[in-house]
Length: 346
Ligand code: DAH
Image (tube, rainbow, N blue to C red; front, side, top):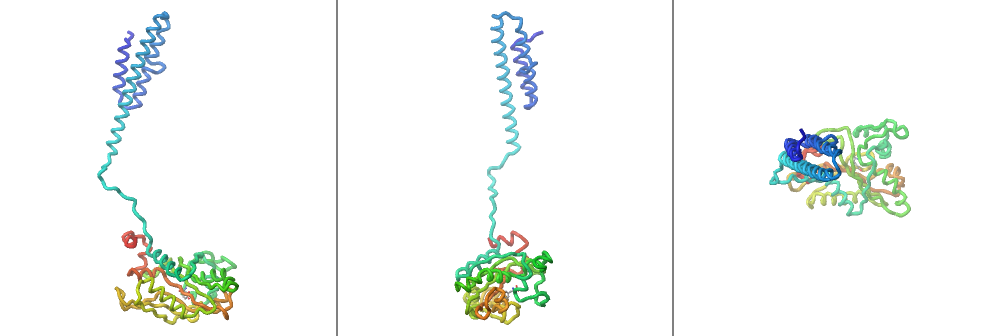
């Protein structure tokens, strides 16, 4: 028995209403509007009708089709709204919660010291230089008057990168920033001899040694200083370095002591100690830096005449300065990345 158009609309609406999701709704749609669907059948059934009948029947079928399409759209919208509501319910957020924030990075305390050292020495005319951490044996040792087999080398055991690096001599992780004295001076030696421009530089950076305990780390930071001209004396070293310490520690009542020592690249050599007159370290002398008058052989390796050019150098530990400034007892704290520690300096 053929269904009336009203029945077809009613059954389509009922079928659509019974669909619980979009895929089943699309299946149901095919049953009415698809190629073999009910509406198509109705259209096929018109073939035998007279032109007059076709007109009225056609109009009825179109209304039927429109009604089914309207029912389909309504159901589609309803299902989409349901899906959205379900999603919103599942992903419900509590808009009254406080925001998480982005978190803010801070400058590492050792880098803070690095910046401060650059600022202080920059203000008295020192250039700032940077050089390779993988260094040639010649720059790290030999040029600094520390030839192969010299016993002073054993104080600075390091990590060798390539035993046959340059000219059959090893490439290594630099054990101090002192090779930068040689690199910088050789680059600027002609400014000294032709323009009378002194060599006046600091070179902060990372250094490496086979050392690891509470006061030593396999990687640490130093700052090298070098001032060479025709008449730079040990008195200049004392003045410049003492002034630096007073400014770095923001204290005028610091006492500074130059204690005789040995380094192959300086003669005479001194270790610089500092005495705290106040604060938690009151009364204590602490070693801050190596220093000295640059050895004539080293001046020669700069490409300068040691009979004419003279000056001082120093090499200070940036971790050491940082530990003293903030009263930190264990150097390993700097490298553990513990935010509870680092945040105190942010
Ligand atoms: N390079 C030395 C070290 O790491 C420190 C040092 C001593 C540097 C004397 C200097 C200096 O420039 O003159 O132990």
